[in-house]
Each structure stands twice: as structure tokens, then as C-alpha cells.
Length: 365
Image 1 (cartoon, one colour):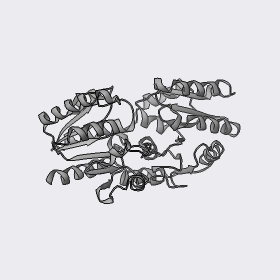
Image 2 (tube, rainbow, N blue to C red):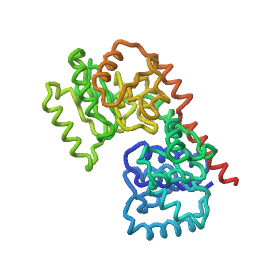
Image 3 (cartoon, one colour):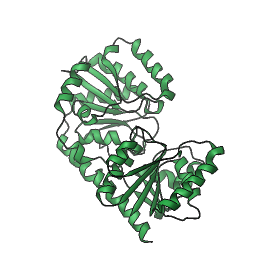
Image 4 (cartoon, one colour):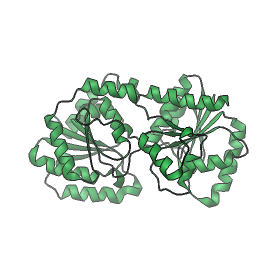
């Protein structure tokens, strides 16, 4: 099959990483994989893995330029003659849907986010098949868009078990620990872009409480700061600068050695105040045997088993989060059982198999 995935950009994020992973696995399986986006730092990876990247503005929300971009996309589809079109976000979905009206190429959408419920967002339910990464998301689109359950497919996003199951980079771990003075520390880690809805503020407030009881605690905030979120970053910096533990709260920026960082962490945090459609870093944390404390909204209930691999708390409740972090320090979690659970239910292999099955069923029709 010839599959075209369409997404806004190829920069940091779970959607982008999922596209890159699927591209690589499709090529391994002998399919022709093409990705259309406005580009980004991951676009070279698409071609290094054997796929093809086509740069096109499927990102801009400018309605005035939309007709021309729809025309270009229509012309491109006629040349490529793909078997499947797979849109990953609202703007690409609208452009693809309109460009495909006369071509009638099988159309798949994946609902990645809990966007505002309106006609603009409804496009993500227009696919011949609609992929959702969690039961919570399925309930959301059935309730708000009356989407037919027959066209919905549950496919949890997958962790690349093979890459996470390889030998750790001990040299990186040692240098990272030395750089941030983490030896003999209780390491609390939040892997997420620095943005309001990931709610690093609640994590910081909880950490300040934890420090009163756990003097060797350190907080790692792992993730990039988008220019559009610089005000939030400065707000966080002010809270840190005004507290007595400023040296123990560390912004590491975006990191590539995520599994190594999870391996040296005692607990990972997901403080999102907006429902997670999946939370890939959360699942990666669990596979590495690092217990997770996450807000009890969205998909987290699909993979957090309280007391077995972590705990859930209500959004914005810094006191509850602090208490659970202290509880983690006193609990022993079975790392092997945690990893096995993720391997059985949330592997990249299951994601690829189920996605290819969706493509195959549409292709045969």
C-alpha cells in the first residue's frame, strides 16, 4: 500500500513522534510511506527511515490561502495516487477532506486532542475510519459529535519497546547526574513542553511542599519552551527564583535521552489540567519502571493502576500531588511487572499492527 500521513509540522510532540515511528515501521513492512507537513526538525528522520517527506503548508489557519493550498493538495494526490490518506490534525484534515472530495481516496483520521467542541473540530470525525488512542476519547466524540461507534477504532499509541529495551547509555546518565548534582537525590521528573495545560506550576508548588520533608528531592522539568509560551516560562521562573529551593528545580530543555532520564528518576509527574488523549511519555516512564503520578482526567486511567504503577490525583491540587510523591518514596513498585504490563498493552508493535489493519480493510474495499 501507499500511505500518506498529513500533519501540520514535524517538530517536538507525541503526534510527531508517532508519525515518525509509523513511517519507519510501514517501510519495514514493505509499504510506501509518504508524510506531508510544513516541515520541522524531524522531517529528515522520515527520509532517513526510508519514507518520503513532502513540504507543503498544511499548518496555517489562514482561510484566504486555503483554496490555493487545497488545489495544490488535490493536484499532489492525483500525482501520488495513494491508497490511504491519514490526517492527524484539524487543519490538515480540512485541507485533505476538501482536496479529496472528487478523488474519494480512503480517508483515515486520528483524534489526538480534546479540542473545543465545534464545527471546526468535527472534521476529525469525518474519516472513513476514526482512530482514538483512549476509551475516554471515544466517549468524547460519541457524546459531542454523535460519531457512529462502527467507524471508531481504539488504537493506543505505542511505545517503541525495542528502542526502550536496549542498553542504557551509562556515560550519559553519569554526566547528566554530575551536571545537575543528582547523585544521592530523590529525583522527580516531568517530561512535557513548558505550557499552561501541562501545568508545571502545580508540580513546582507540590515540590516546594515535598522539600520540607524530603531534603534530597530534586525536580527536573524536561521539555522545550515554545516562543508563544515564554510568558508562562517567565512566570514559573519567578516562582522558582523567589523560593528557597531554586537550585533544586532544573529546566533541562528538550532531551533525546528520555529513557536514561526516566531510569535515574524516582517518580514521573503528569500534571496536565486538560485531558491527555494518551500521554506517550507517561507510558514510557512506566515501561522504564518509574512510577507515575498523573491527573485523573483523559487517558491516564487506561494505564495507571493505583498502587501498582503509580497514583492519580485531581488537576491543580498541589497538596494531593505532594502527598503522593511522599508516598512513592515509601512504596516499593515491581519494575518488571510494570514493564510487562506496558509491553502487553501499549507497544509500538500493537499500534502498527492495528493501524495497518485499518488501512488494509479500507484498501480492500
